[in-house]
Image (cartoon, rainbow, N blue to C red; front, side, top):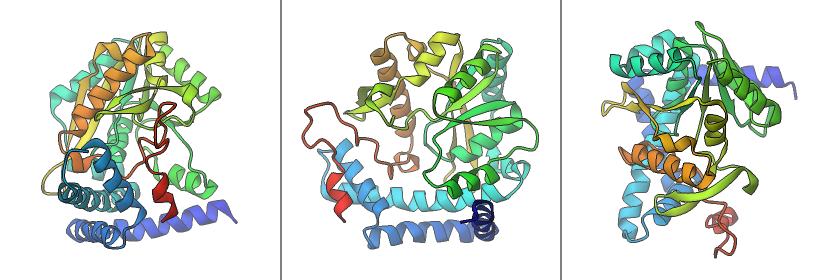
Length: 308
């Protein structure tokens, strides 16, 4: 397969859907969510199972209502992301309300010269957050490459900046060294803190919505080693489905603790608080709890879903 050609073909398809009027794109996104639920698609099964895992005392009817709202919002987020990927960042950022205090908090952290780690949970629209960061400063963004070469080539096409330099850093040994150098030089690093590590050696179990979740140790170790400040940031969707509000806040200082378990617990508590602002805006279609502590029964709470 010609990878560059296939990636550009995907971009052309994204461009087509990205040109839909916002009201039509939102309606289509909600329809996609409805379709997932009606067909019991993978997204619906995972979201439903996550609701049962984090709210075991709630009724099945409550789980279903939560699942419905999550799927509608996830479908909407998918369509709006196509729009953000295929329009110039300066146009997309017109939909983002930025409180001067939040922007100044970010700029002050950069000015202190210790390096800044931006912790960006999967809440609201994190692609719009990427564009705001890239419009504000140079930065390095850690990412886990898709399994498909075409998928990775597509992401490199759509994740661009017109004002500042953005380094897409692959997870791994070489990437870690890049992040350390960036922070030691006073630069900015972006990390998605709620991705489950692929190996038990790369994380520790810490509570997340009442369940043990394998949580990365990369963030606290980077902060502890370099002395970098950690800020949480997210772009929260407004009720009208058209606009967003940027939030930037200092993480609990213990997020950089040398004790991995302490740091991971604090990190998850912060993310849980953010996700609880509007649970349907959080990425509950992701299998967050596949890795479980040794001896847990069942070892993978999603295993039965894979047979569907």
